[in-house]
Image 1 (tube, rainbow, N blue to C red):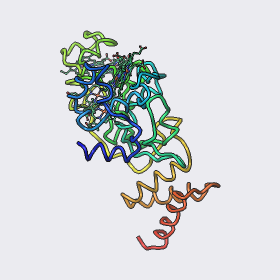
Image 2: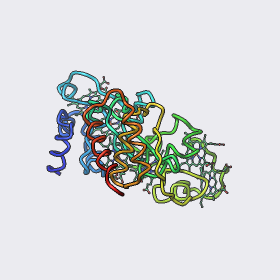
Image 3: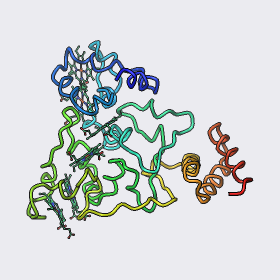
Image 4: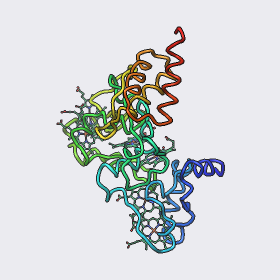
Length: 261
Ligand code: HEC
Ligand code: HEC
Ligand code: HEC
Ligand code: HEC
Ligand code: HEC
Ligand code: HEC
């Protein structure tokens, strides 16, 4: 645990005071949250509420996710629960500096596969690919079913929007429609597909030729797929502004281009 927390500190969470600083005034929440998987994995109150050094001294307010605009609210969970095809830091930005209340796309661009946008393994992109979520819009979010402080899952949440008789196949809605924690919430269980080689921005705000190019570059490094290499080279070569990360990528792409594959 200590090692994990030390690591997280090194990753940009060093400004956090930690959950013990909340115990005097929020005893019940601290106790309940402390028993959850997330807490045991090292996720702090401040990951969802913002830096609390001043607040814990009795000054300053924190963010409450449900009081935020949907984009910022969803970013609180997406900072950790998006996987997709990958994520690329924007020039000069470090996504570990993201704080609750901010927009995540300021720090990084997130990408999903074009062919199977839900293939990545994160609840965020899975839910976004579901027709249930697309139709429900901002009303449906992680917190509709998950209680952040207790780790409990509200299995009756579906009935806030659906009448049981709309389906009529039994009470355990998520047992059938979300079997195995499948957040693609569909009419029936559908097989997983490979994501293909092409990617697109997760949302309109995730765009950027530099970031898309670097995403293809990262994917190519893992897959060796020549189509991804070509896309990376095309996008990155076309940039007017080539920062250090782009320069390094172009150099490696060039080296690979001269080798026979
Ligand atoms: C000295 C007592 C005290 C400590 C220590 C403290 N809080 Fe609070 N906190 C309060 C009070 C009082 C409120 C209610 C403020 C209001 O409603 O005006 C509050 C409200 C909040 C809220 C709701 C948003 C807001 O700002 O009103 C959050 C979230 C929160 N605290 C989180 C934390 C976290 C996380 C910690 C530990 C890092 C912490 N608090 C430490 C007293 C404290
Ligand atoms: C995974 C994200 C997450 C973590 C971690 C988290 N919270 Fe919260 N917290 C929320 C959300 C979401 C709400 C709003 C709940 C709602 O309105 O239904 C909230 C609400 C609150 C509130 C104000 C509303 C209330 O219930 O009075 C306080 C105070 C608070 N949290 C304190 C804490 C403290 C202290 C910790 C750590 C021990 C903590 N939270 C950890 C997500 C989180
Ligand atoms: C700072 C990173 C971080 C943030 C922010 C975060 N999580 Fe998590 N979450 C984790 C980690 C790490 C785990 C444990 C590994 C896993 O199950 O993926 C986890 C596990 C979970 C689990 C499974 C826990 C269990 O008891 O089995 C749920 C549900 C969850 N998170 C929901 C949320 C929701 C909802 C939010 C936003 C309100 C959120 N998380 C925000 C990192 C985070
Ligand atoms: C409509 C309800 C619902 C919504 C919305 C929802 N979940 Fe879940 N989630 C569930 C159910 C049901 C499970 C399975 C729990 C179980 O089997 O105990 C689950 C499981 C999980 C798990 C653990 C299993 C896994 O897939 O790794 C995580 C992590 C998680 N959810 C995160 C999230 C996040 C992040 C969001 C928002 C993007 C979210 N969930 C939105 C209902 C929901
Ligand atoms: C915030 C409201 C909301 C919640 C909560 C919600 N849904 Fe939905 N869901 C919708 C809407 C709106 C539609 C689209 C209805 C339509 O097209 O007639 C939908 C569609 C669906 C569909 C059809 C999907 C398809 O591919 O055609 C299924 C299945 C479904 N929901 C199951 C669930 C289950 C199971 C839960 C709980 C785990 C749930 N929903 C929770 C609003 C919600
Ligand atoms: C035993 C498994 C099972 C259970 C339990 C279950 N469903 Fe279904 N659900 C299905 C199947 C199968 C379909 C039909 C898929 C098809 O033929 O398109 C369906 C269809 C649906 C649809 C789409 C119906 C339409 O008219 O568009 C919704 C919405 C839905 N279920 C919601 C729910 C809700 C809410 C619950 C909990 C009250 C629930 N389901 C419980 C298996 C189940």
